Amino acid sequence: MTQLLTDATIQAQASRLSGWTVEGSKLQTTRKFKDFIAAIEFVNKLVEPAESSGHHPDIEISYNKVTISLTTHDAGGLTQKDFDVAQTISRIS
Ligand SMILES: C[C@H](O)[C@H](O)[C@H]1CNC2=NC(N)=NC(=O)C2=N1
Image (cartoon, rainbow, N blue to C red; front, side, top):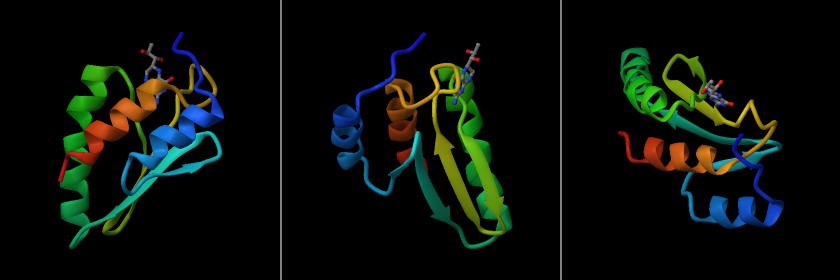
């Protein structure tokens, strides 16, 4: 199982990730698009990296806004996997 990160490591890694915040045991970001279709197109682009990394974001869609939460369910909190997937998602437009 992937190891939980310490609070200090979480803060250090979060400070290097633009647009993401730590909310309890989750890493979270919200992206806004021009409409629902654009939001869905973005969500579709998350499928391949999630599957290939074996790590899956929680996704909430509200019309043109997509909120992505990352946590490692198996470990019960934030691990390096969450930050790695967040970096990958940050590069997707
Ligand atoms: C067996 C499988 O790899 C695991 O259950 C994976 C699947 N995707 C996952 N995704 C997330 N976000 N957290 C997990 O703990 C997790 N576990």
